[in-house]
Amino acid sequence: MFIIQKEMTRPSAELLREFEALSTPLVVDSMGRFNAMRSCMRAVYPHARCCGSAVTVKCGPGDNLMIQAGLKYAQQGDVLVVDAEDARDFGHFGEIMALNAQRKGIRGLIIDGGVRDIADLEKMDFPVFATGVSPRGTGKTMGGYVNLPISCGGVSVSPGDIILADCCGVAVIPAGIAPEVLEKAQKKEAAEKEMLKRIADGEDLYDILNYEESLKKIGVKFL
Image 1 (cartoon, rainbow, N blue to C red):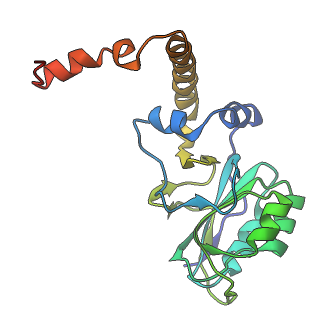
Image 2: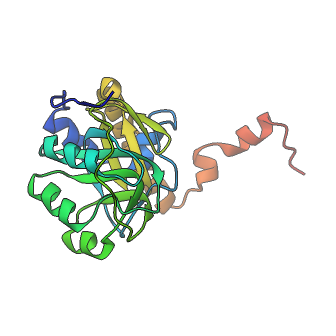
């Protein structure tokens, strides 16, 4: 069955702003090192970064009709998250769609599949994270769905989840635990800043975190 769910519940703009100030390593560590997409999901140009609420799309490999539908119903502050079945040898998204998305205030694209027009995307500074790049175009004949749960980059994504993507990769923050994850990540950020200060002042990380005790616990002997 092919379904387009036009409406969804989105996180608050304030919550998105708070996450936008964080890095993916901080956020993923605060979720127990879960919900990081596979390492092959990479920015298609350097320094790309985005944060927004997920509009989820399932499309056929080598076909972008459902991505067009997702683009139609996405709103300002959203990120398109697409399961294209890791079809890396097709350019499912390029300059024209990016211009449309940018005009609507959509913050980026995450796609388990290929894209094209990379130089144009960089020139526009429209953030795209993909598993491949290809000049090969796509059809527009296959169904799928919009705003139902999908799998992208090896992670389950539901509409309204928060997406944070940067040079380290892509993190998915489930909507139901986003406030808790934010609090943990902000505390971790503060702790890391203090650690950096102590290292700059001359301490060793080994001593700050008491790694010698950890080594003793696993049976390491010091001669």
